[in-house]
Length: 190
Ligand SMILES: Cc1cc2nc3c(=O)[nH]c(=O)nc-3n(C[C@H](O)[C@H](O)[C@H](O)COP(=O)(O)O)c2cc1C
Image (tube, rainbow, N blue to C red):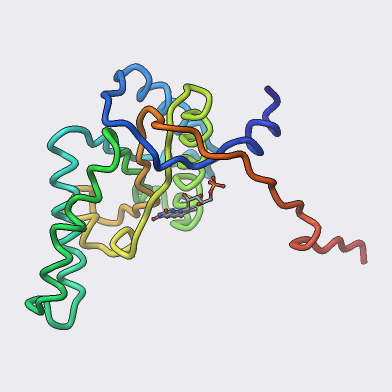
C-alpha cells in the first residue's frame, strides 16, 4: 500500500481486546516511533510501556491529577468520579506513554522536540495499523501538567505528548471520507 493510502486509511480504534500483545510487536512500533524528523539530533523520544498492574497505577495517577485540580477535592461529586477515572487506564492491555525529554543541547528548542515526539504518536498509529493492531491516541488535561510527568517518573522538563492505547481490535472502525485540504490552504505567489 502506498504511504499516502496508508495515511488516509488509518483509523483510531478504541475498541480493543484485553488479549496480551507480544513484546516483539510493541518493539516494532517503538522502533517506528523513533524514526521521526528531529532538529539538532536531540533524540527526544521517551516511552513507557504500561501493561498489567502498571495500568492500574496510571489510572490512580489520572484520578489523583483530577482530584488535585478540583476546588473541593472532598466534594461527593469529585469523589464519585475517582473509580470511574481509575478504570480508564484498563481500556487496553498496553498503553505507550510518549514523551519528549528536555535536551542538554543549548541549541535545542523545546517546541521542536515536543513536535518530534508528537510525530512519534502518529508513527505508532500507522505502524499499529500495519501490524493489525488497534490503537488510539488519548490525552486529557493531566497530560500537559507537571504532576503526571512527576508521578510517572519522567525526568524534570520532560513533556508528555500522548497515551497510546493499544491492542488487538474487537472490531474495525468504519472507513471515513477524509477531507481535502482546499479549505485549509492559501496558495501565495506574491
Ligand atoms: C493530541 C491528541 C489527543 C487526543 N486525545 C483523545 C482522547 O483523549 N480521547 C479520544 O477519544 N480521542 C482523542 N484524540 C482523537 C482521536 O485519537 C482521533 O484521532 C480522532 O477521533 C479522529 O479519528 P481518526 O484518527 O480515526 O481519524 C486525540 C487526538 C490528538 C491528536
